[in-house]
Amino acid sequence: MDSRRRRLSFLLLFFITAAILFPNLSSASLRESVKNSEKSKVTLAIYYESLCPYCSNFIVNDLVELFESGLISDVDLKLIPYGNARIGPNDTLTCQHGPLECLLNTVEACAISVWPDLNKHFPFIYCVETLVYEHQYTQWETCFEKLDLDPTPITECYSSGYGKELELQYAAETNALQPPHEYVPWVVVDGVPLYEDYENFISYICKAYKGTALPNACTDLALNTIPKENASPNHPVCYREEATKSKLSKIRSAIRSWMDKVDVAVSL
Image (cartoon, rainbow, N blue to C red; front, top):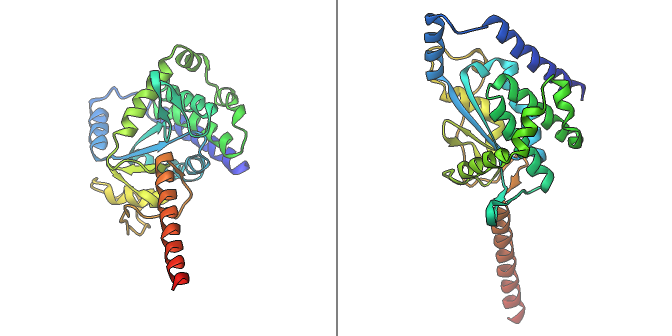
């Protein structure tokens, strides 16, 4: 628990330092430098749901490495908090881990909208997911005080219905994925899903990087990266309900086939 709190403190220090070193982008040369940097950035999209324990584990223990290594300066990080939720009649949302997950998905969507700057919304999401990881997610509102954030815009976003609109947008984006996502966390680097190798995301980022000089965080990595479609995850994931049903159907089919063979053998 102490290490996670230290990481949260590190994130805050990281973002504060960046704000001090680069208080504005008023100079033409700095703007041009940022523009060129944006062109070489690798896009990292994380499709997840707030109460999936494997998503919170990934965010808290793996994704944070982007910041600790400094690689975040070469990455365009996008978080999509929807996951395996489903849309019913009249745009009702049903979440895999119940109503509280729908609430936290929406709260995190609101945070991304209210604080579009990664410097603000990622520490908040990291704080909430740390509480999920520690099984204390009912205390998620303490993150406002811990990070000295005003809860009012998040409350207004949620209560006004705008948060639900954001979730429906994330639903459309998630459901339009090609290939379709099979489980969460579903990690995508420059449009390519990493499947079961999602915890190795930094290696894929380094391989996809198109800048002139390889980031320092990449120099010591072995870049043997080949995503395996339809492979069984080596790391725990939260499957989509449809995927779970499909797997169960295959298991039942295999059992029936085996039993048929046994029956034939007995009859002989």
